[in-house]
Image 1 (cartoon, rainbow, N blue to C red):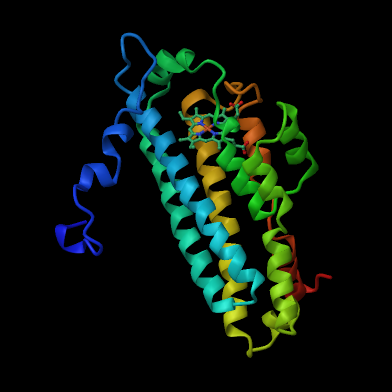
Image 2 (tube, protein in one colour; image 1 turned 90 degrees about the horizontal axis):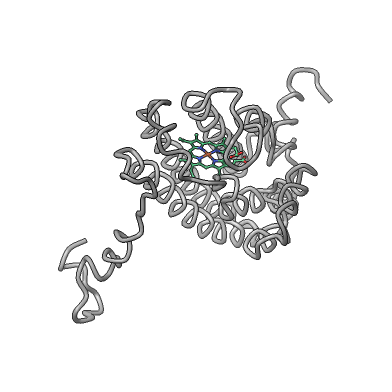
Length: 254
Ligand code: HEM
C-alpha cells in the first residue's frame, strides 16, 4: 500500500490505522508462564488460519452467487481464488513442522480443552462446501446449539447441487461435459471444483501428519477426540461425489 493509492483522500488514515494494527498485534496472548518461546508461533499460525478462513468464507458468497446465476466463467474465477487461498492456509501448517514434540508438550497443558475442532469458521467452510455426512451433522449438534454461521451455511444448497443446476441451465449433464469437446468452460469449472476438494483434503492430510509428528498417532486430542485416528477418517469425506463418480465411466464403471 502506498500514499499514491489514496482514491477518496480520507485524512488521518495511515497504514497502522487502516489495518487496525494496534489492536491486531495486541491479540497474541501466550498463556504459558514463564512464556514458552514457541507458543507465539503456535498462536499466530492458528490466528492467521482463522483470518484466511474468514476470507475463504467471504469468497464463497461470491462463488455461490455466480453459480446460482449460471455464470460459468465468473464461477471459475471465484473458485480459482478460493483454491489459491486454501493453498496458502495449507502451506502455513509447515511452520509448525519446526515445533518438536517435547517442546509442544511443555506448553500444551496451557491450552486446556481448546481445540481446532471448535473452529466455527472451519465447520462453516465444510458446511458451505457441501458436507452433509451424518457423522458431521451429529458432531455439530453435540456441543449445544449449532452456531449461526454454520447453520446458515447448512441451509444453503451444496456446491455440488449448485454446480449441477448450473449445468441444467446450460442444458448439459456432467457426463456430456466430460465426453464432448464443446463444453470447455464447464469442464474447467468441474475440474477446478475437484481441485478445491483435493486442496481441502490436502489440508486435512498435512494437518493429520503434523498432529502425528507432534503428539503421535495414538494420542488423544485436547478436544476429546481420538486425535490422529479421528482426523484420518475425515480425509475420505467428499464434497463432490458425482464428480468423483464420473471418472469410473471411462473405465467400465456405472
Ligand atoms: C501443534 C499443532 C497442532 C496439533 C497438535 C493439532 C491437533 C489437533 C487434534 C488432535 C485435533 C482433533 C480434535 C481434538 O480432539 O482436539 C485437531 C483438530 C483440528 N485442528 Fe489441529 N492441531 C494443530 C494445528 C492446527 C492448526 C495450525 C490449525 C489451523 C487452524 C488447526 C485446526 C484444526 C481444525 C480445524 C480441526 C478440526 C478438524 C476436523 O474435525 O476435521 N490445527 N487438531
